[in-house]
Length: 265
Image (cartoon, rainbow, N blue to C red; front, side):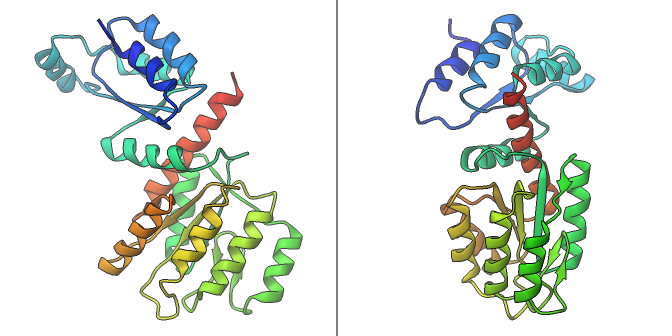
């Protein structure tokens, strides 16, 4: 019979498979799966969602499949040691998959936040910290170039706040400088389209820099139909988008975790 270990190993050899997503309730041959996942995760990211973590959920597993769910701590430890990224929900599973499937591996965990809304920048900072990611410190040359070309009221720190009159050109300049800065490993772009100065052309700018694949780049925007259409366009370009800062931070943490699991092997 084919089991989870066989499927993981097969998919890791498939050239068209960029990420493996798996839902588990229980694994009958734990050692076989562990060895397969450890070997396969070196080639292809594996994201796992474990069901039956609570006492009630464990009973539901027994009713569903007749198998034992097992202690969630044991599974989590085995996942970490095998280089498997663990998700806590279906939403996380697919968020992690989108980022791991489309973004290059980061060199480190230093993140630059580019925003046109100070509040969203603060929330993004909180969630990055909760996910053990650091705020990048722009180098002196980057700060000097920004100061030379940006209006005086732009906040030249991290978050880099382009303020409520931000334009597409400000975003272009900020992205160009941050992509070149060796102190920046990953970039979060926040675009709040409720301001009148930011136009749909921002999509082309973000896609241009994102498709260079020099550094991981994600986009965060909350809004209505107009915002959702622009986000869908970016997704078509291979740029992961999120409505809320916490989901972006968690996805970048997964990307960094996967990079770390590979460098430690």
